Length: 352
Image (cartoon, rainbow, N blue to C red; front, side, top):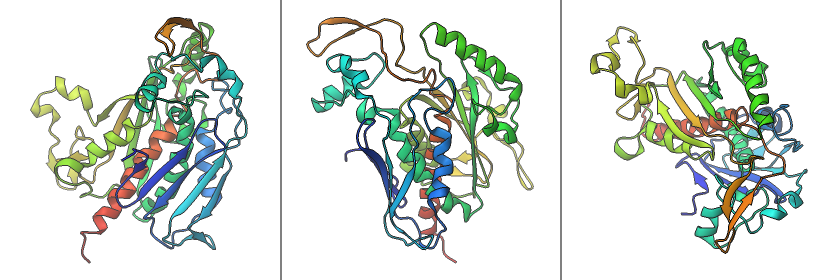
């Protein structure tokens, strides 16, 4: 297995590199007769598109998607759906100085160790640019979720140590940080400018909430819903930790505090994050991802070259100060892909 395919029934394979001609996804297992147009996909791509936020990379990519197959007269046909997004604003010369040098915090060293060759231009396949294909595929996955009225929300919970104190879902997409608390947005902006001036970068927390997830999704033992959600979210390059429900906070709770009492009509609390024994409870799914600081920074860092000789580098080019907020729609996408796959898996064992 080469690790470029996700899912068992709703299967997505992504392809392409940061500075290659294009990136894309092939989706197999999508049910037929679902309404789908390029505009459905484009709306999602706009939220992760580079060159939009003032604090993000200046790379200007239109990220215009084309649907090459699997759709006829505005509906899916049940055959593989192929999506493509062309790269239009590559500046590979910005990376010439990194051809023989490993950037700290990046996949340069590990890709070289695994394959004996690497694409140094923007990180190649290891670049966050690859996630455009995931977001495109997840727009199709949402069409599957729509049939069961499953709604997936994602937002910035924390950036640079500044945390949202309230969750106003209506404001998530109306500010440059995709934060659900407009009162802390100015503080986030000031923090970004402060760190940018020092040539450094920021990390944070992204939270996903799923409303309307039916009970019963997930497979016993190895394919637990929370296990595959963790795998899906951890597959996003900048993510270094995943929590379900109370997450790591559960380690400091008593059993009597963490257990969610069952009452007529549902659960009295949701410390389990909507999953028990790896199977959805019907309550909201709550997934929180820890996002590391962007690795490409202007500050001087110690490294080595291909010959193992010590070097000092300062990474130039066009980079975000933080993976947040552009990573928010990517993490959202991975949760959508996971749920679409599990919904279709469940249909295989559900009798009328």
